[in-house]
Amino acid sequence: MYKKLLFLSVVLFATSPLFSQYNYDAGYGVVYNILQTKCSNAGCHSATSADALKFDGDTTTVYNALYNQTPSNAAAQARGEKLVWVDQPYQSYLLRKAGSWFDTDLGLPAGEPDSAAHAGAGLTNIEVEYIRQWIMNDAALSRLTIDTSMINGYYNDTARGPFSPKMPQPAAGTGIQVRYGPIFLRNIPGQDETEYMLMHQINWPSQMEATGLNLEMTSYSHHFILFKFNDSASAMAKQTGLRRVILSAGGTVSPFDGSKSVCSVWVFPQDIELPTGTAFFWPKTTYVDLDFHVKNYSPYPILPFDVYINIAATPRIPTDGVIEMKSRLNNNTSLGVVDLNPPYHFNLISPHATNDCIDADGDNGKDAMRYIWLLNSHTHKMGTAFNIYNFDASKSNDLGTDTIYNCMIDYNNPGGPVNLGYYDWEHPSVEFFPSLLPINFTTSGLIAETVYKNDSSFYQRFGFTSADEMQLFYYLYTSQLPGTAGINNISSSGFDLKIYPNPMAGKGTISYTLNAPAVVNATIVDITGKEVAALKDEKEQAGNYNIDMGDKRTLSAGMYFARVSVDGETYTKKFVVE
Image 1 (cartoon, rainbow, N blue to C red):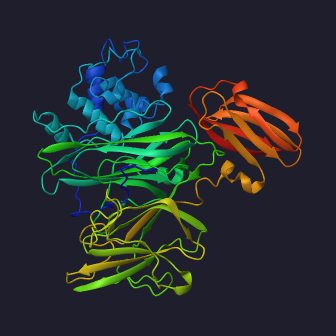
Image 2 (tube, helix red, strand yellow; image 1 turned 90 degrees about the vertical axis):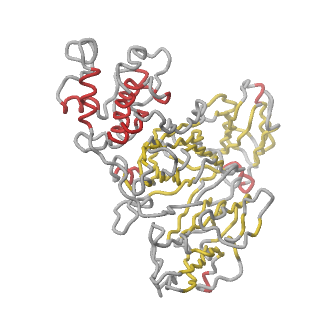
């Protein structure tokens, strides 16, 4: 049901305030000069050549010919690429042409025109990296976005550190891969830690159901968070390019800014597989926010940091009975302030004292049933306990005895849950509920009690750095149990649809019962929603019916859906052909 999972284990545990890590001293100008000197000549991309794309115009002319422009190459068009796609170097055809030999993620498919002619093209590793970093960080016309000293220092070091191992691409039709970087970081004190947000656009073939997230990232990485924007307007409101998270007071960029939800959090490479019958629902055009926090405590003077994330997804079929997995992040930004109004935050963290702070879920009373699959907590270094209870709305802040999450328990111990006897605030245990825990958010909900030991001489309040504190809990949930939607709920409507055997080997039967005369239409569709067999379209009397699918069409191995419409009301059941 799930494997090797770790979600909100560490959210923004900052060991110190973060400082600007890049000394940007170049931008589009250096890219333009590379194109002028290496690509604009009598034989290639100049006014005297036969190529449609010219690089010997002035800076603005060349920029306008590249930025957000569709390539003339048919293969690149089919991949949905642009000549330069801001912030997305691996969907930028210019970088593929300039560096197809430099990075296998930029490689041109075998047989694509001009792939051999552009291999190398006289560009150096450093020059290709300049182009990659320019595209990844805003692809701006005038803003400085390239740290040439950092890049030169890395590539001129013969003992330089390695790039992150590449993750294999998902098999065709099973999902996509998103790559974050690389971003480069020095290990000089004051320049060895940074955190950046980067917005990324995913164009799916249709609405999708995402069921798995597989991640690899560079050693020495601190954490990576995958957010999904709730709408395109929220994504478009963000500044393009790398957005540095400012953790000190007055910072304008926070990982939690904007209308978005957390999909998952990693502190080291993990595979995530949602429970059977659940999925994240993602629109055809999905915008994600990538939060990467790194610290170079490696032995290398400069190290490239990178993240690969494979998203397992298939086209969404609204009638397939899959339940949407949702997320809730409860972040108490009023920590340190006493609130005497509902929901009654008691948050004062006094100096030289042990403080008990209570925070109710802001969604209490706003919804009906929620079925929780995952639950986790987070504080900074003063946190000594963090328990979560089933909130009783009739008793105000009375926590009661219904403990849902006990911070002392290591829920993921290989030998079974074990009581650690302390709260591991740096790596709090993640609790899973394989059967999904029902909580009635109309009459109840969740409430957290957190204990802080403040040995300092100052009151503590909410903040992102280790000099501040946090009271945060996070959970994934569904609004109904898997197996209670679509076809799996048909018994309550008086319609009984079965498929047997399931799985089947070449031949199977659809069985159903009509309680009254009705017009019945029966088809088989594949996982993309494409109809592969029309089985029946006629009026039938009340009674029991069987449709022999093997007599209608031979199906290859895979997953399918039997779709039966009764007087316009459609029921669907999933089956597998072995």
